[in-house]
Length: 357
Image (cartoon, rainbow, N blue to C red):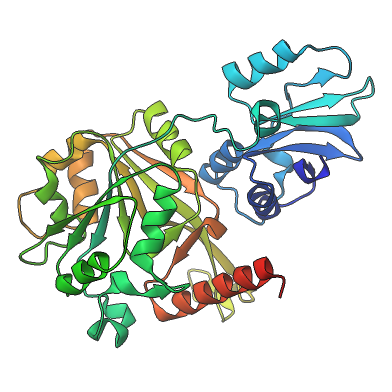
């Protein structure tokens, strides 16, 4: 139970780490074991949109009017109604002084591992045709999609992360060194279907999607071939549909530390203040999207077309563009050497930990 409880003074970053560790989308907020409220990943996403940062306290963002039951004053059917109708992940049980006695979770109540979201079997399009200039000289020999991660090509790691969530159909848009990618998949056995869509010329970051106009009849995921995610795609799909988005962009908050003192000047060039090595926070595009299939209609056929152009044209047509915020630890970008090395270090650490090294 204690793993689902977090102190009101904790930081947002700590809450995200705890949620990921206990595999829960919600935590119970307390002060000296007394129930104060609940905190969900949705609360955190909303706080980011209001300007909060990952190092801020959760004290201003958690739900201070939680649903709870008094110990001995509820029936199983009461819990069932709350879980089903309100889609809660946790329900705290308290005594008369609101001291937390127990925390019910969805998995515990309905059986370990049972999903509350419907299975998502939307196609996944993986943009695998780029030259991977940031990873030279590796990509002068092999395409970026075959970067090795834990004895597998990254493209296989990406597909398996979706396949584990019941998605079975994949389209690989290929161009640069496409014959090597095809040979790789011909040499391995898979439980999923991979279809190759070949560009005859480079079409930018989104132009290759025009080749799928007659093949995709539903919403679909689009991902770069150099990013790895640890997220619930069912929740992403739920938020996409709930908000009636045409495009949902998966984003995260990235912190950069300036290695110099930042000087703020007045109009005459005099120093107002010096901020030593400030930390700057930005929302960044992770390279994973969920599109309504209507988006395909605005992509020009077989022409160079990038994501920023797609966003511009979608806005002109009044399409709704939303975001789905994830914590930084759920995203690994291996498209450049420094991030690739960090990812390898994390993978090696996890493998050694699992082996008890």
